[in-house]
Length: 243
Image (cartoon, rainbow, N blue to C red; front, side, top):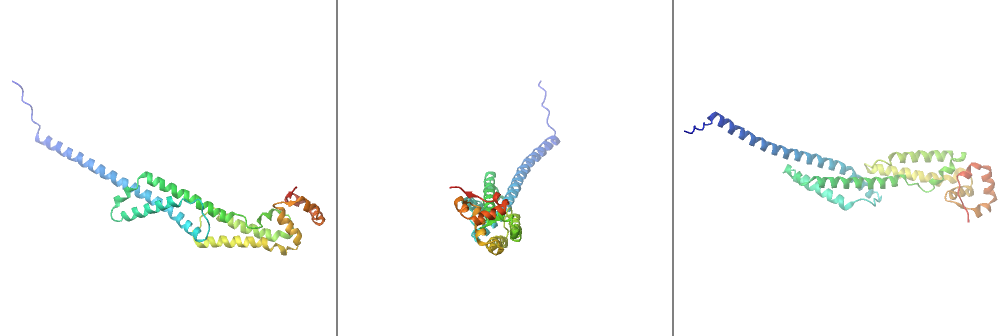
């Protein structure tokens, strides 16, 4: 006769059912945990995006208000980024999972757009701060004259102040006003050189020699030739156009 199949004790069946229940609960918790982690990661990424975009947006508004052009600003892409942040931030107020509507590619593209905008704004700001003011090219010539020691020192002080802020985006309108005031003061240094006592003709020659003075004009002015012979160091700083 065939042997009887042994029955599984009730205690083992109950334990197996309990283990199956625990396994099912573990899978559920794992799924929920992954969802929570995803929400956390997207939230952190969105926060980083907003933190990166905020100073860029503020600087762009300041430059536009001041009439400083930013030709390479990716305006359309920034508008998309702004709308996405606004939409998701509003939706998460009632549904935290709404942040998942921004996928990794969206966030990567948004950060790239903000990075491009920052570069464009930084370049425009640096041009505004660092471009030479009218007459500034003459500094290398003026340093050779004792009579210009004071205005050259003043010009260097103002230019150093401008250089110090060229690499930092403006945070307030006062930052732009300060740069504009320093540039105006720097330009005034070169406008006021006529009071140096060196003579209007010679000063005009110095201004023009940065770009180049026609050789024929120079040779036809004995006074300037004699003055250059008396100041041989000047010959290394002037330009003469031949022909």
